[in-house]
Image (cartoon, helix red, strand yellow):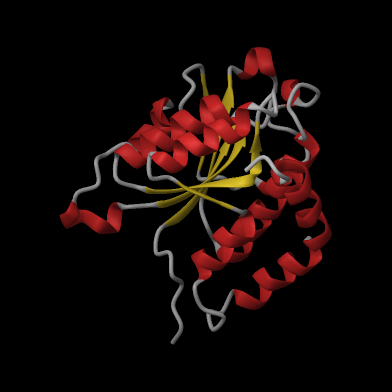
Length: 207
């Protein structure tokens, strides 16, 4: 029987909040990718971790994502920039993964903001603990567009995989024979126009 390639996938949704809506470069395109990834999480039964940054001042997670994160494994507010410094997240993913405990190694896909601050610090912290980290380039952004390619280049140099939402998905599945493949492929088909728009807007010549 076909098996999924990733054995311990998880999606981190980093600080996609209402207050940032008019401040973040191509925010609407980042939301489209995040919605798709969260729909895929439901189809593939992948746990989701969601944080907000100082929600009392910066507002809740955007309304477009709320229906897709109602069953999130962890929802945490924080003032630290890295998601890994939120106590609930650290308790689940903060232990150092050793060679003898490979089952504890997660394959973490990250969407959210800002690419050069909270996303970068979260990705580096996860990688330092031995997790495999995938930053989805069509699902992250910053206030200033120029910050994004610099952040992604830094993450690549640190051993973090910088990929796209679709690249991550097919690597996660690994085999068209898994039971969930048809549902996931249908989501890809339904969102193909949004995916193209997000790739053109967020990547373009900047990556």
